Amino acid sequence: MSGFFLVLEGPEGAGKSTLAAALAERLRRIGHEPMMVREPGGTPAAEALRRELLHADRSWTPERELLYLTTARADLVGQVIRPALAAGRIVISDRYDLSTMAYQAAGRGLPLPMVTWVNTAATGGLRPDLTLILDVPVEVGTARQLRSGKARDRLDREPAEFHRKVAARYREEEGPGIVHLDGGLAPDLLAERAWSALVSACAMLAPAPAR
Image 1: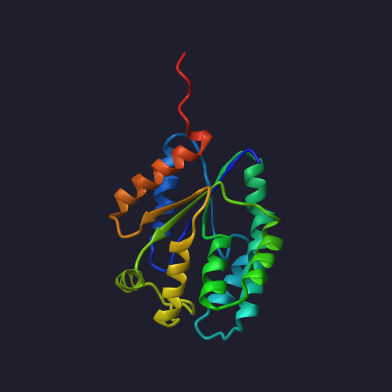
Image 2: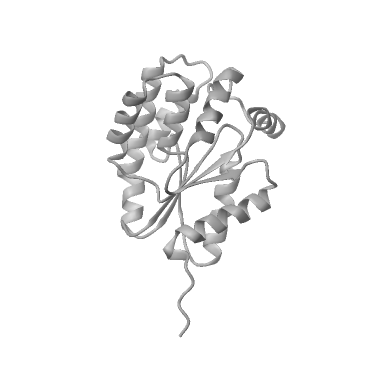
């Protein structure tokens, strides 16, 4: 793949959508047109699955939730993300497979081997080049959602203990291409730190050598 795949992750109210918009605007100012996607969603089929998954009145078993989410992911990867990367574009995704490890494995308690296998099947092994994890306490994220007036979907309404397990799983993630950021920072400062991490990781943004 000749493009660059950036994923933003974190618990509810971490500020991923705001950060994604800020990074995209900065990329446009220097001549890039990033492909912006969200999970679940990004294709007609995936958006339909998103509506069902997040509908406040729906009831799901953890296993069905996992399969619906990863079906949406498979469609997004095949229809949008891989073609954009092949065309040399920067893709910014609001959530990806780490969300499934946090919500369905840690939060729901599904067996890790099951979640890992289904994730790999859905993505075909496609890994992000950089994952920025916005760490924020559950109480802070919930307060932000309430202040913003966001309609609380089915996942938002899960008990606080569920969201604590999700946040803890995010905090534990480490490895190549993983960068943790303080989601409690002011949006401008958070965007600046995220931009620095992106520039450091993405060769497409490296300054041209002096002649």
